Each structure stands twice: as structure tokens, then as C-alpha cells.
Length: 281
Image (cartoon, rainbow, N blue to C red; front, side, top):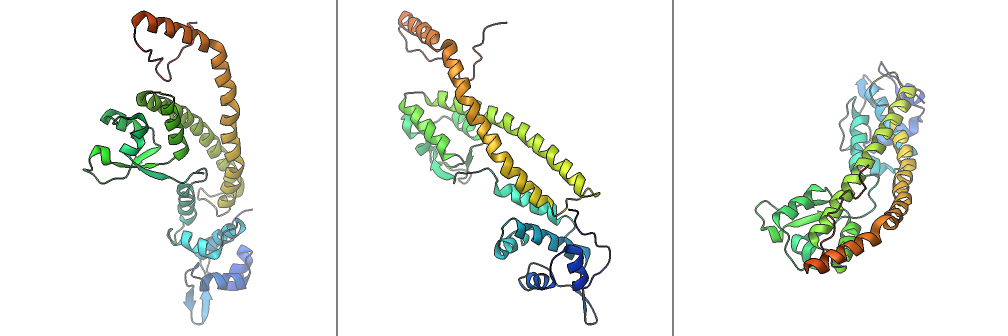
């Protein structure tokens, strides 16, 4: 459905007809502070195209299940301009559609405690580089007292379990970095497809390059469909691929490294995480 196009000042009755929102609701939204005051010409209250756009936005947000208080909080963060929809979409993206975990905060000492060693500056840089750990302590904080926001506590917990298996910290960091690189590459592919789908939908709804209010509903619906597909694809494929890798050469690698270890009298370190072990073509 195309958004209402308003080129002149409208009475509240005309605004109601243009947007499909009842006069009572428009006045209630104005009383709640969701709409700015109309212009006055004598005793007549007149509404502009920006009012119409704001009414369309509120209607879409109500359709998505947001209450008036929540809508008011969202609209308070965006300007009353022609780009209000774009600003609101940006805000919706920043709030996160896919995050399912509440971040936790840990000192560097806590993050490294399961290995019984201190993280080196290079390892800290690697930790920050993967994007799932954010240093939030003030500049100048001693390295071992630095505080990090852990965006995926579950992934950190998996790291602790790998430490219990006596896997070195450097190896675990390498595994995490490689994992995140691969996930980020896959995520970019899904984002590209999301963009294509949204552009096609918007082109069907408007002749303007500006985002129509109805895009909020389209984004919400598409994300709700995309989320289980994207996450489920990884969950479905990884166990199969992992089994294939074990079947391919796990036992041979164990025997080779045992032979090497006994020959050298040293503990084998194993292949570097992410190393391509495929046979030459």
C-alpha cells in the first residue's frame, strides 16, 4: 500500500481521510505528544505533509505491536523531517534484530583465568579485532585490569570449555577469529539479499527514493522470516561438515602427530586453526 501523498495543508478530517487513521486517534496521538502541534489559521488547525508522514509512521508501528509509550520513546530520538522514516529504520537496526544474548562484562584477567596465564598485547588486539569483545574501560587502564563487553557470553563459555580440554589460549583465539570471519562472510551474503528484497519491495510501493513508512512493516516481516533461515542454515550445515572433516583425516592426523611427538620428544601443537589441510589438486 502506497503512503499518503500530501502537498497542501489539511484539516484534521482531510488528514484522516488521506492516511486512513481516525480523527479521534490523530487527536489522541497529538495529545500524547507523538505529533507536533498543527499550524493555526485563525481557529483552523492545519496539518502538513510531515504530519501525514508521522501519522503513517505511528500507524505502522502500532500495526507491529508497539504501544504508544514505546512509539513516543522511538520518535523522540528522530527529527521531524522528511527523513524521519530513514532515521527510524536506522534506530531499529541499531537496537538489534538478531541478538539473543545479553552482553556481559569481564576484566581481561577474568577472560584469561581458565588458562592460568596473562593475555599478551597481541592476543588482546586479536580479541578486539574479532568484533565480539569491546574494550569499555577508560584509556590508560592497566592491560590486565581492562574491562570488556562480551557480546556473546555463550561463545566465551565455549572458550572456557576448550581451556578445560587443555587447548592453549592462542589456539582458542585463532579458532574464534576464524569462526567469526566465516560467519561474517556468510552474514554479508544474507545482508546483500536482504537489501535486494527490500529495494524491490520499496520500488513496488513508491515512486520516490525516500523510504515510505510502510517499509517498517516490510523490514520487520522480512527479518522475522530471515532470522530463522540464516541461523538455521549454519546449525544445519555445520554438523554435517564437521563429521565429514572427522571422517576425512582425523585419525591419520592423530597417528602422524603422535609419531612426530615421540620422534621429537615434544608435545605436538597441532595444525594452526583455519589451516587448509586439503590435498593438492
